[in-house]
Length: 352
Image 1 (tube, helix red, strand yellow):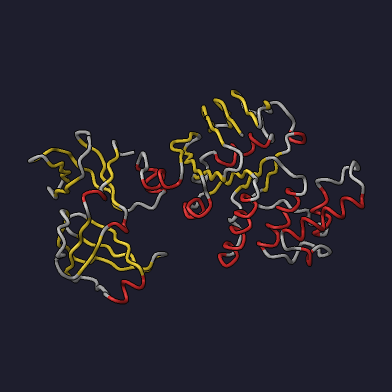
Image 2 (cartoon, rainbow, N blue to C red):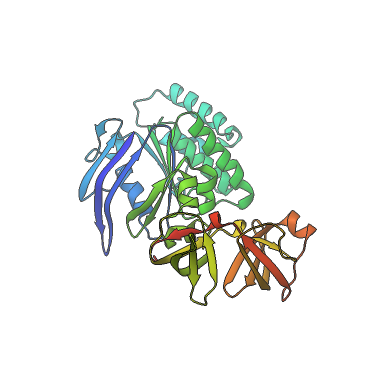
């Protein structure tokens, strides 16, 4: 288990501030944040490239806060791979164990074995100048994994890889994790977190602002920042009231939404996932309590299929799958009906 206790570090005008983390053995932990949020700096503190001003780092019951990076047995794969250009693939992989303490014959066996596991045996005698991003990533991984690290740190590992190769690299990371390796993977890409993480943390301005399993974090964000990172597009500033035994949320333009039974503040943000909103040409026959007539403003392709923007007094963003759109196409400036159940509304206190 990795434990961070009240870790703080001042870096110029930026500060990592009072970070507490517990990452169990075998976890695939994705740390999600924008550029400049502190995620790479936190990895460097865990790896031992830098020392915290305050706090402690424990790994498997051992306080490693002041231990040198060479004896922490933590593997770090850099965003730019840090491959040595004057060495072959084989030389790069062997480098981290070529201190003279390992027999050359044994080292060669280990290089061959790790290359086979990462499917780069055919590259061993090549120089690195003509390798693809995916191949460079595997070489960097092999150089790290040959040391059998207790913990693997990945710094934006997909940043320089072609989209066509990302699925293969993700599959490799999942396989390493299934074999029992604990992984901390930092990224700015929400989709990487969704597809890989067993646990996720969101970092902003040097602080972890939400942490948990991906479903909890991405379905129930604690604030607007996390919600935007989680793919939410529909935000409504509302006031809450109870009318005839039912909770209502009223927008500035007096549009009123019905909400599920719960406790609510006097005012706040109500958010909706785009896929929870249904769109149709006719008024729905179902008894959905939130049903509004509107006009299509814009239709754009999206990773899910099509994103349809509707003006119904407030602006709504709706995701429609490609198959659904083919069966029932929509057109800009046409009148439509949108609807969603009261359970779809998620309430955040405050605007941030």
